Image (tube, rainbow, N blue to C red; front, side, top):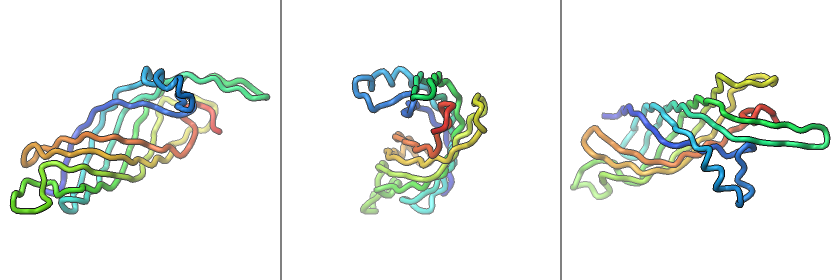
Length: 171
């Protein structure tokens, strides 16, 4: 088979203006703002090592922020639902198959990925125009082929959001 369909769940931790990681003394408090992440994915495998993946995730971002400069003071309380759509390429370091006669065939494989995506914020409330920022998702993970048509993946995903509208104030 070349096509796969699946579901995913995990944790989301927002790191940005509202949850800054620049102050290492406050870094642990950011973990109080974790949210559940749920999603679906479609994967097309070109071969045992290369694939493309289309995914959808639903999560929330939350935090509190106080910004002040000489002109104004701005407070943001963030608790926004996000809809994320990603398209990325994946590279498995081993052939993910159960073939004892093939040298690099394994029932497990570490993998890396990178791609493009969009963030949709339907309940976004701001005087600024609504936008759907571009994202660059990237990360690494581990796949385990549990049965002929059943895989288990664990992965770390980071999304670089190109835009600054999640907090309600563009900069």
